[in-house]
Image (cartoon, rainbow, N blue to C red; front, side, top):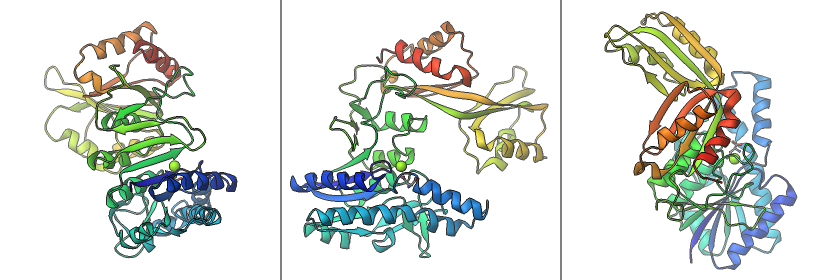
Length: 401
Ligand code: ASP
Ligand code: MG
């Protein structure tokens, strides 16, 4: 009998009516002679609400208590779901992560799963039971409750699939898969049937919000088959596999964008060993994205530009100004920028993609501020007011409609 991990996101379990629907869906898998392990996140809005509550006590709410608080939503969803399965005549129970246990290490609010004890859950499954496991949470070696970062129930599902050696992990969400670009920005966006882990990782990191990026990385490293499907429609979803888009003859798989970028340039730093290291040393807790240094023609001075999340801009500028180890002429910043990226494994073998990308933006008179590339993606920073237009022209240019 195949063992499946079924993960349900917040909107899928967003109300009691929806939870009852989800229970019926799970029953179908069970009736078709699958072994099933269910992972659920909190009902939509609950985690946000708990997060707000912590802030109304203190902006610096104690981190260990924060994790106890925000992980509570998963407990509610899992008991409601297990209760619904029992009502349908199935054998089911909820499992909070400390009861299994799901062991984590790392910091509060961004812990990583290290080990999962499979014994009790597996024996329950083997007796025909359907365990419903809380996503997003774990327990540390000090026996404190931890969480895996927002959106972390994807990471739970992937880790559970890995430790239980599942045949496949199905991520149920409110969209029926991954699209060539955001359907809210471009109505011509098309669903992607198959995507490689690498492409999916880039798409998710670059703005597609279907799955938490670090969970995709974990799936890739452990070769876990993932299916993304909608809880509310019967449409086939998107498969993430290690075969390079067999059905997808296109060079580019999709276009992603993010709107919450900010760009900082440190102008006129000395061009000598150790300078970049000193600039970034105080920024080690900041999520840095693109980093570009222009090479100085005369070996004298250079500029370093990097991008960060918009919400970090004040902090970063303060840290730069406080840094007495560096000298520079001035700091320029801009928080009205966006990043647009084209992603596709086909780029590896096909030259000319960058030129096509730049030409499409040039035709629209959209100025490119920063460029960065990897083997399978090209990203640029542009003025945020052009982002929707850029997404549309690129989608067309690369034949995605
Ligand atoms: N409930 C958590 C959150 O809202 C985890 C998840 O949904 O994946 O971030
Ligand atoms: Mg979620």
